[in-house]
Length: 100
Image: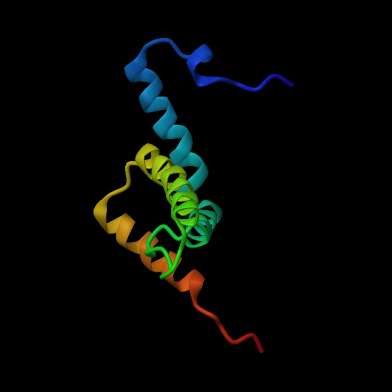
């Protein structure tokens, strides 16, 4: 199977951008995709500050993870309300929940 490359498959930069946004939205803006997106946001610490005492290398590593997540968000072009809901979902992912 050959991987589909958007730049090879679609001519025209503006059309490629719309197709890329459509593809990202179809992957992440569905129930399972929203769970994955919240997990990724929590895992990369998107909405957290680096821990006190973090070394420059640790901060750089966190920044790199956040940059990749920011790339996903930029392709989704979600509304401020959707972003606030994502931030809350990511916050909930970081909480320790009691498992009975």
